[in-house]
Image (cartoon, rainbow, N blue to C red; front, side):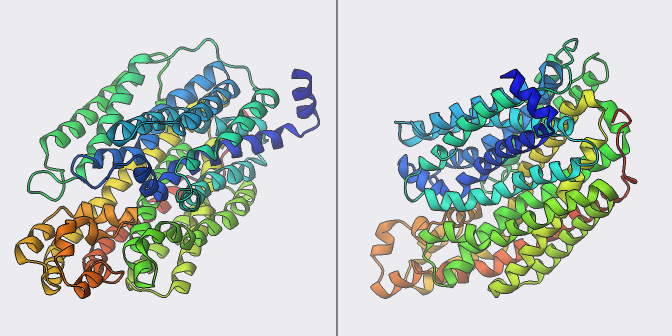
Length: 562
């Protein structure tokens, strides 16, 4: 088949083959990063596990985050392996691992905690495959396309990746109710096709750097440090003792401090080894440093946004507009489609224009537009008119699409050819890590807002409708994170918080009210809005700093080896 690949390249079609295949790879990876968010209730029902019971929130968090965490930890190392042994070889391996893991996720026979643990482990392996794909796709495209077309190619690829996260929300809502296994099975045929297609049709256009070596000490300290920090962040939003969050927990503090110290040791190691995992000298390139920083900050703003919008729609707006709680996960994905549409519109266009004008004007304008979108959303009432909400989501999607494609092209254009795998992996690590950090920040701000007034509102509302004051007080002092998780999962929160015998002891009229669609949204609206304000303020500041970083990157810069 080598003669076929050479003919494709010689006829100038190889670059389009590379674009099509890598776009398929990254969109699969990002769809699976979000497809579980909407389908989690169906998964937990399928394996017969209640995620809201004490001790089970571990499985809830790690089904969501294990994929992101493992890909964040490994993506730099796998980019380095691509530089050393061939980017296409590592990319092909990733497609194969990803497909096998997707198959394994569909065939579990276990239930309860054993079934949940099996799914978490398989999600880890799926994240390994995704890390290979993400780490090497941008480098393959940068090698395949001339500098005058990279913005367009990377723009299409990047928009597909980001849009995949929102497409996954809708797919999860559609497939989960039919059979939860379908959310993993749907990617298998595309994985098989992509694996074979990549194996026979892609090849490295540059010689691998076989003389390099792997920085094992750096890899180990980096992986352990990043994992500890991310574990600390995930458990920081869980209650600890009498506190609504776990940031004061000795375990969380120990994880964060230990992780930070290990990353400090990692930086010391990287300055002394001959073949470092992190190419720290790349940060001397202003366009690269500014691009990575702005990418990190935009991912912080975008990562938490998705969770806040889902909870806003599922927990309050959709029930108040006549949707039952079990229908809200799918409808939330559908109602967020304007955000995806904005990405699809702006991404390729801004990528093409940035090939001529550089990344700075588009990336800066994109982050400024995102900040304006957050400010407008913050001014919205909780019970908004959807048309205006959709227009703001469209503006945000256009703004983030305008930023993402040129910024990624600017980063890759600034890199020497031999460091594109490592540099692209470094950017992906910052971006993926930012999403986990964003979840911790946004949830913490939201929980802080809820804890101020929700207990009083909930207790008064329950007592008013016949619940004994002692029972109402007990329920009202449950951790706010339980309320957020129930709303996020599309459960009827009051039915989850009250024991069945308590509900059945009430009059039919009161049962109908407290388990209905309006009772919980009316209680949570005020405290949720307070938390939402803090979260959107933080996101606005992150976008403004990202805009400043994008501007100081300088004019269009392409590394001299191009």
